[in-house]
Each structure stands twice: as C-alpha cells, then as structure tokens.
Length: 281
Figure 1: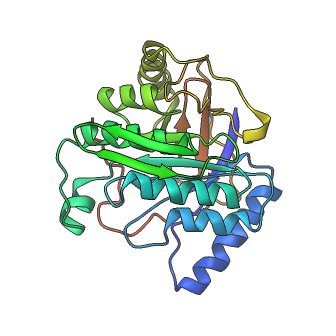
Figure 2: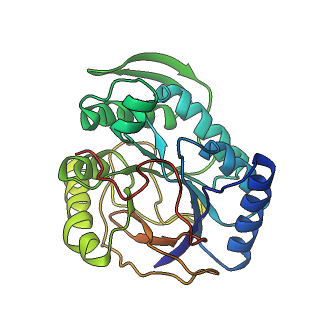
C-alpha cells in the first residue's frame, strides 16, 4: 500500500499560492509520503506547471495530476508538455487525465462535449503513441488524424491514469492506461466494482504483466513498447494520516495497486459544482 496527499487548490493571491504549494510538497516528502497529486480546476494554476514547480523542492516523491482535462488541448501538445515536465521532475510525473464535465467543457469553455468516452479512447490512442517516442506519431481514428514527428521520449516510465467510474470508462482505463483516478471511492467500491473491471480490461487487452520499476519511482511501472497493459493482483486501500483534519479522500487504482490520498486541508474547492460528480461512461 502506498500513501499520499492531495495538494491544492489554494485560495488567495498567486504569490501566496506558490508559497503554500511549496510548503505542502516539502512537508509531504519529509513526512515520507510516496506520492502527491494536484488537481486541475477551472479557476486555478495549471497542474503540470505546478508539478514542475514542486519538483524543484523535492527529489523522491511521485508527483501527479488529478486530472488534466483532455478537451482543452491536442494530444500531441499534452504529450509534449507532459514529457517536458517528466524530464524536469527527474522521471517522477504520473499523468492523470480525464474527459472533465459538461459544465466545464461546454458551459465554461464553449467546446463540444459529445460522446466523452469515445473521445477519450481516441485521444488516448494518440497520447500513448506520442509518449512512446521518440519517433513519428501516426494515428488515425474517428477523432484525430495525426502524422507528427516527435523527438522527445520519456526519461523514465511515465504512468498515465484516466478518470473513470462507469463500466465503459473503466474498460478504457484498463485497456489503454495504467489505471484510474477516483474521488470519494471507498474500499468496497474499489474492490467490488472498479479494480475487477480494470483488471479484466487489461487481461483482455493481452498486454504484458505489470512490474514495479525502481527507475520510475512508481508502483505503476509502464512498458512503453506496447500501448496495451497487463494485469496484476488487486491492491488494497486505506485512509492515511494527514497533518490536518481531512474530509473525504481520493484514490488512484491500477490492476497492481491502489493509492489513497487525503487532502491536506479541511476546506473544499470553491468553484461551482465541486461536489463529487459522476465521470462519463
């Protein structure tokens, strides 16, 4: 079992947010946390930029995004940004992505929000190819036609997780990614509903079995020569101690392991609709 903490989103002016972010990540590494995650919310810092900043004050802890919305940038652009941050962090990035929600993508940004599960599958096909570089990215599906050279490759295995809760999205998570990112999911939901579906999808994909990799500093070791993932024994989940009283908890689940993260503060994000929302699929 791996323990972690969720950092942000913070209130206050930008300068104070940076100070708080750095204070929290320094505490998390000193406290022995295995992993730390930062959300991508409509009103706050860019999550991947925040990861790059947190990497300057740490040397060991895994740094993840929970989650970067897919519709806001092309998969090649996201791959390039993620590979850059992963290199700057010394190979410690865990990239959490997701299809977000209609009230963010449609109502706030004015972008289409049709068939989010199908869009996620098509997006991940391009993203996986781009993260398997260096080399040309040639992918054609219902959403994207990409023929893009890319000279970047991951400096260490780069785990990708996708926000999923329904059976369709969990199937996509098991087939095309290293796992899922959850919010407010308890041990029963993970053990009875989520992990079995991800593991079955990974088995059906016929990929190689997972194995932990010291080089990745991650329990989600990834084999980049194939975009298909294998399966492993389901892990357990438990709520960690936090330096402050917490309300609710967050999970990352893969066929091999689960991670539970408690947010480091009692206050909840203040953007509209911030309660636990269902993930498409």
